[in-house]
Length: 636
Image (cartoon, rainbow, N blue to C red; front, side):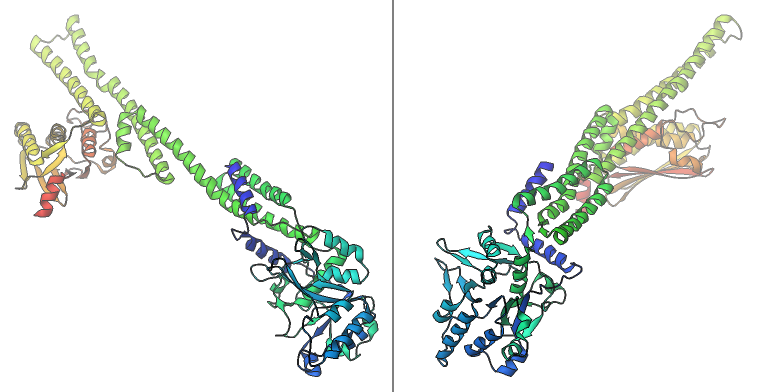
């Protein structure tokens, strides 16, 4: 599992652009930049001369004559270098002499950088240079292309590009070279890769700007620009280029292209870029939290693992923010965050599968240990979900405990109930041999026969219950009316001996159930026999057979002793009797009703009891009709 998650992390890092995870990283990056506190001061050595709305109103519609740019350069003569973010690729036929005037001003200034445009889509890459008089006079040329990310925001800048034969410089290293900082310019041009992430010092409009018209007209002293890099560009809405940046989150405004260049120029001079970590380092730092998550999932409980994983997830975000703000290193963590979110459900799924296999194994062991338990478990037909299987295992454990209790009750039954008649027989034989209180042969044989019969009845009842719980029962369609008629015939003589009337009422239409006739006959025989045993003379036992929906319902009602309320919940458990302590209570083992319930449940039915002490009891058995009967009833 750990190896799979680590491998998944590496694949996500390698294919993050295809999977759009780069956009997730960009969202985190922008959020971190928004949280930068405090906002740093702009570089005082970088000044912006902007073509703003006031300049347009004072100097007229754009484009202006290039002689105006020459006048501007005259007032920027003390600047360290001047870079124009204005394209001069076309001649102005209305004022052809202006190009020469501007070219002479550029040459006189000696530190002016003019912009170019690189067209990388062409093969080989083409460069649109300024018109020849201007290009030949400029100290340096540099392209001003800005490449936004897929979401349209500018976060990085490329400082050089090549067509395979020639390397083209961006305006930033060109200005540094023109300003006398050749070593910095050379290092920027030699660096690979050429992309740098811009560390924006603040939101849009953070840099100090000077209106173009004020500078050109000499309203601002030339000494204001002494030793400073000056960028000249458009600031007016609809005139210049504007892009969203990470700092645009502060007030939702875009940043002018010339101010983006100012931020990049400041980063280049101070080497204050946001530095992307190398790929191997990104992979290692993304794998570490994944490994920690796997350790957490192995060692902690599910609740603690979830909480700890959540804390680790948030800690990774905090660490990433601190790494960016304090050390200016950028670590994309989207791959790690995604895998961390997937790790918990994946581990949970794997744990569930493991637990399910273990539970199924335990259930098979339990079923193999106890055949009655196996039949009870098979009757439940569980689903494969973990909660259902856990509930099923708990049920199996309960059944196993019940089986253990039955074994203990069986031992008590054998040690007491079955030994008592044998001890009585031995006591009679001992008295007869001793010559004290001897019985005649007829009395002695009668008592021995009675004790032996009691023992045999106990053994038979016990074996009946064991067979009902464990044996495989053969099912056939059985006419329930015929079964009850046989039970009525068997019980008639016993009822007459106690002067009890038996009434039997059944539907005219035969009701068939899918069952075992012998088992059903003994079941209802037990119920009717109990009704007779526990009823007084001159009472009635009523047996009815009706149909309710897809069920045959047998009701056996007597007017006997009834069962106390506190004994009714356990009356169907083996070895439990309601009137075992009464002086005139019939002899019994307490197994009969347990046998009845077992047989009914094996026939997919249920049995209920309604009883009131001193007024009688009613046992109601519901058995599902066979499919043939259900079909005929539906057709009828």
